Image (cartoon, rainbow over all chains, first blue to last red; front, side, top):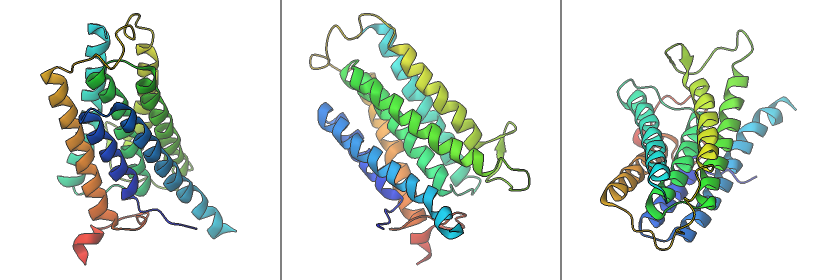
Length: 55
Length: 180
């Protein structure tokens, strides 16, 4: 399973914030969706890893 | 966008910048490195801040409030996960406490309040009437927005230094990229 670096959600969020400040509102919201997906993916990795160890 | 909605969104953005600032102070001045779940909570704070920042920068929109509320709910999930990890007696805790509570407990309360606050702001009538495209941000809104970008960037750089290009260890002891 692909391990996503912890920094990825932050980098995408920074991108969304910069895009927003440059005036691209809709793009910023779409980039935020990517950051949200990355955050949830990293979280589920953390949730399932101890389970895999136990199993 | 009404003046009340604008002021309250700016206040929420300032509050989130303050939370990120306190977290940075604990990390840099007191040497307590954030754990993986702590970092995810910071990411959720940045996401919630982005929603308020979009409102301050462009004017009120339902989508911007959605960004703030969904980010806060993800933050609730992450913080609740960490509270549950340490809820059993004898399992210990992570990091030091502030005013008797650990940071993840504070974060759980803060995320709940952020979601409640953003939902409460939706009750302000007339804020969506102007739309977002005609909105011209004030100089204060621009400064506040860029300050928030700096906080987000600081977190990204700090996380990259701490975790490198992989997942973070559960109990980080140093900055991965600086040790090589």
